[in-house]
Amino acid sequence: MPEKLKDLFFTQESLTHFADSINVTYTEFDKKKFLKLIYDDLWDSLELKAKMWHTTKCLHKTLPNDYLEALVILVKAAPTIKGFEAMTLPDYVEKYGMDHWEESLNALGHFTKYASSEFAIRPFLDKKPDLTMHYMLNWAESEHENVRRFASEGCRPRLPWAMILTKFIVNPNPIIEVLEKLKDDESEFVRKSVANNLNDISKDHPEIVMEVCERWYGKSERTNWIVKHACRTLLKQGNTRAMRLFGFGDPEHLEIRNLKMDKTTLKIGESLNFSFELINHEDKECKVRLEYAVDFVKANGKTSGKVFQIIEKEYKSGIHLLKRKHSFANLSTRKHYPGTHSLTIIVNGVMQAEQTLKVI
Image (tube, rainbow, N blue to C red; front, top):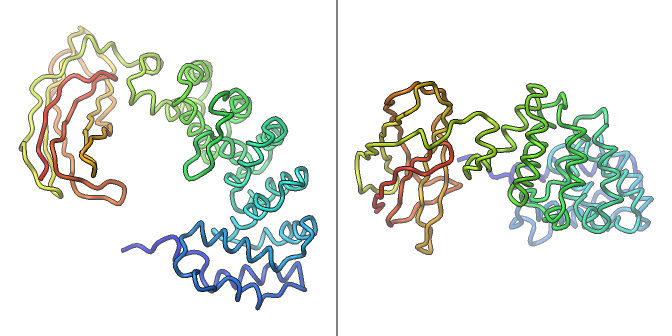
């Protein structure tokens, strides 16, 4: 069984290295007191982020009381602090630096070279969005790819495990201005963040994202990849405008027949084999995006659908047989429950054929 993240970071060895790094730039640092504060009665029970927050508080108790003086120490120490422990530095700014905007924002731009400041920047964006986005625009032109990536990732309105940026959900235009600077970035690390940011925005403003994607598509291979990845939610939703952008054919000329399953009742842990025929009624090739959706029964007895991609391919006129297998084994990200599930085939965003099965 793989180790949990909380057991890989904030170990005795890594925290000792952390303390030594601080001590190099701040010789008065009380390493013994810091480590004693760390290992309190609750330490072993804390999860990863809670360990980070606790470390930040312990650091605050052992650094100078003056925030700006403490910040100078952390800025100097940052290049030598590695791993998730380095996230403590931007966290320190988030917790104690809101009264020193210029110094704190500059520090976040520095810390993100070593450990992303994407979580710590969000209270600043929420409190003073115009000022903070001015920094984000400048960071988008940085020579350092981690800083450019931070310019995008930090302002994602729905960044997972982070504070929701409600103001940017309502009006994403300031984000688009940053992403315009990064749409053809040489770094895949940066481009992936741009795509994920647009995908976030698409959940609230699909038309804005489609306007951006239609403007960007065809400019370069890099930008094309961003656009396709950014539209993944819209494609799963069957957004007609997204389908047409990527050249998928009119679903009215495509048909699904003879959806068959090898069993109608199965146990949790077993796999379902299913097959169906795709019919292209046009007299020419048609670009097709095939998916299937499973309505899973949840613990409360209700159902929740999830879409799985089968293939994207050009299909000639005529009948094409396809076969697939879906596992109902429990995963760390999905647990199965008994009840009636449904399987639906989706063609270019349109649900066409459905069967039900019983999971026991």
